[in-house]
Length: 104
Image 1 (cartoon, helix red, strand yellow):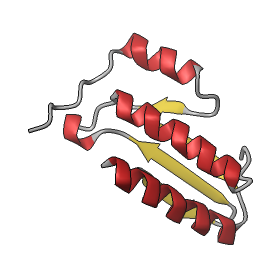
Image 2 (image 1 turned 90 degrees about the vertical axis):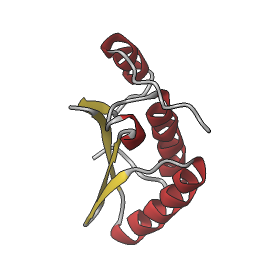
Image 3 (image 1 turned 30 degrees about the vertical axis):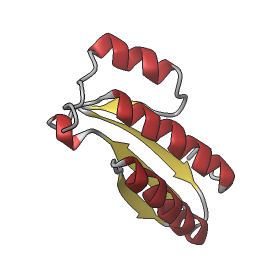
């Protein structure tokens, strides 16, 4: 049986956000938006979904015309922020770069 994820303290969250330009805290999630043509956004969302699914995590996704927003929190920790969320954010950043997604 795996251990429950550990919620990060506010100071830990702020320190991790300083390492992730473009990500912001919105309540109990971290979020970032990317500008990308719609068809590229669809491909990027599928790529992210595949990677985070294999991690046993997921991200909320809002796909719009030329804009994709990701929101990340750990549901297993009561929808609180954990280290896994920041790992997902780093992976999303790498995937977005591979798809030539930019700042909104």
